[in-house]
Length: 305
Image (cartoon, rainbow, N blue to C red):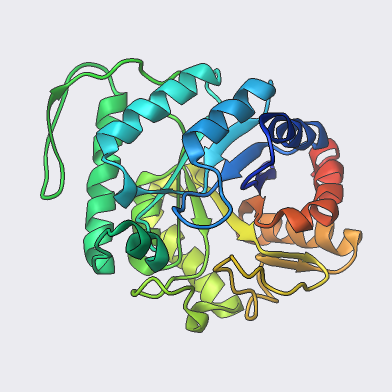
């Protein structure tokens, strides 16, 4: 039976002291991972500095991203930054990565938002570069988007062969890539190709179950070693969407992305999705849901699961 893990997305704080206190509260409540997103707009810290501070403030808590936008950094730069952070955290880093998708990020920074297929091609190459540079010895790579020539970066990550890789997505091609290459698959809604937000046509129970089937089929023998997760965007009672967030929970009521009800209801739903569908990594998406979610974490992190 898979152990249930819990993460929380935390975006900002008013000071270094407040940020450290948030990290320590998560650790004390039994959370496994503190995660930050990667966007150029909105009320969000930059990942590397924020995760380094969180790691320094805690002892057990893992730190990670949900997710690095591949288009914002060359993978050789990310490989170096991530390896350094893994060393400084004592091997507690989880590297979540995706293509990058939010149109306002690209428009605001003057970056071209290329078609989804191009961005996924680039992400696939980036994964090969990351794994290669985290390996032993010089690495060379010749791709359409990236070229690496005999580069041997130091330090190497503490975790071998590399820090856990988390790929998030909802489209079939990204899910198949995640099933082949990632350690953790975070299953969510597909986003529109123009980067304007989630595709409402991709919501609902049947769509979610279809994604699980896609992952299982693509993973083959790897499936037994994969960890499946999802982001929980509503907990307890339904709340209005945050004005700054692209999340759309209107069609998620029957999925593990919306855990409505009492404390017991939430605990039962988490166990159900773990026992029946192998979802074992639950990430609360909004800090406003932490009180309701934390009570479930405290029970499941200390109990038999």
